[in-house]
Length: 144
Image 1 (tube, rainbow, N blue to C red):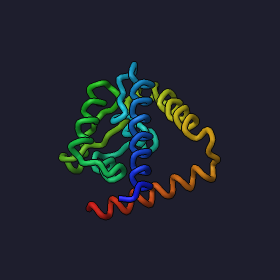
Image 2 (cartoon, helix red, strand yellow):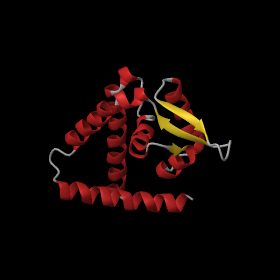
Image 3 (cartoon, helix red, strand yellow):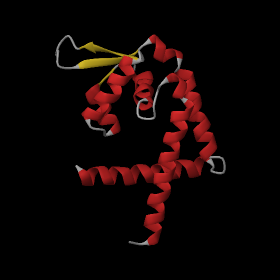
């Protein structure tokens, strides 16, 4: 394998792991993990989603989502409401407790973004994001 591709994968992996560590530290006292905050973000934006919606948005299997949602529910951050038209499905909503920590979560994300983009201008950041999105979509399509 060409060394440039190995280096690219290594740096993406390092960035991902460091972000996980950062979020876990920043939100530790809230008992929200790096595997859970992403669902709160989407629920803040959409008010109400289903587990299936979250699986489609994040390309994560339903079993992993179920574990995270159960944990968030046990901690009082979300509530699941049975769909009156189809009892097999639940609508997921944030609770008042989750709304109280919304700014804290967004501030942690902004702090991280500011840290990693310190010497990167907005145009470069957008280009990097677009390239990573395109590569991710190719990987997702390949693995379907």
